[in-house]
Amino acid sequence: MALFHFKAVSQSGEEQEGRLEGADQQAIVLQLQQRGLIPIRVEPAGEHSTGLLGKKISLGRSHTGERHIQALTQDLAALLKAGVPLERALAIMIQVRSHHDDTRLLSRIREGIQRGQTLSVVLAEQNAGFSPFYLNMIRAAEISGNLDQGLADLAHYLERSRRLREKALSALIYPLILLLVSGASLLIILTYVIPQFQQLFADMGQAMPLPTRIVISSADFIKRFGLWLLLGLLLMLLYARRRLREPGVRLAWHRLLLRLPLAGPLIQRLEVARFTRSLGTLMQGGVPLLGALDIARQTLSNQLLMEVLAKAASELKEGKRLAEPLQASGRFPPLAIQMIRVGEETGQLEDMLLKVADTYDREVENTIQRLLTILEPVLILGLGVLIAGIIISMLVAILSINELPV
Image (cartoon, rainbow, N blue to C red; front, top):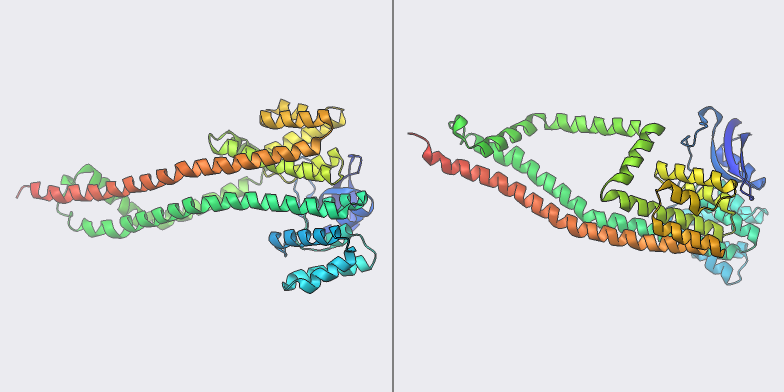
């Protein structure tokens, strides 16, 4: 048995920290849930960090892909909505599934349900990609007695999140391919084509035009030191990655990202969409605001925004509304803050949060499309100008041979 440090929140939003003994992290999560607590962080006691930027773990990393989890959630929600009991619904899904990993997972879940365990407890025992967000959504739905709707909301959340991420990745594929092809083309020209002209220009010496000397020197430098440059770049990336694990460096880097001219607003909108959809879905599932805020905060990737939300949670305990600390931080868009404020005033905060998420999902898609519309021709034009410049520098040198004194 090992000793673990945990941080959790109660259904009323009260934070609790302490230490528990268990076989592993999943066992501690199970103990906390059985006590009616929502686990936020579980880590070995020796690795505990008291700061907000302390080490986090991801519970139950995926052996089952996100698409499979989404499909399983959607199918189970549909069967429950049709009035099929949970154990029978799992049996039906086992029969119709052809994916071996899915059937094994469903069989383990069904066995747990047959033993009298709740779905959230059984899922917490699986090492199949069920995040704390997922588990707490299920648990909230069980407490409210509306598991079918909770699963439907969860499936919708997973679908929207995956679709937004895939659209962003798909949009970047063409520019990345273009950059790789451009780099490969320039590398071939500089390391293979240009050296073929060096013998031709060997007798010209300093009589070569300046552009030609620059191109040949660059090609010679890359041919001699290219591998060392690549190795140096790799070492720099590894060093930067290691430094980014330090809380102070990571916070400064994330602050810089939000200030970048084009990427900054895009990152901000992505994070706002992710946070508001997570928070709105949790609240819609019955999780109290304070508990939902702590869980939704963990879904963000920007450390600066996570700190803003941690401060907002502290001010919520003092009786303030959510919109006030978000506006004071200056890190959230005015439209999102106004919509959140309206939701708080009308008592429909979860609905307004989901509307904010939909709004910024669309903005992210439009922004990415606009950036790519500009980026693609710029890349093509830049590559064309660069290659044309190299070719012209060679032609100028060839033509200048006739001007050399006999």
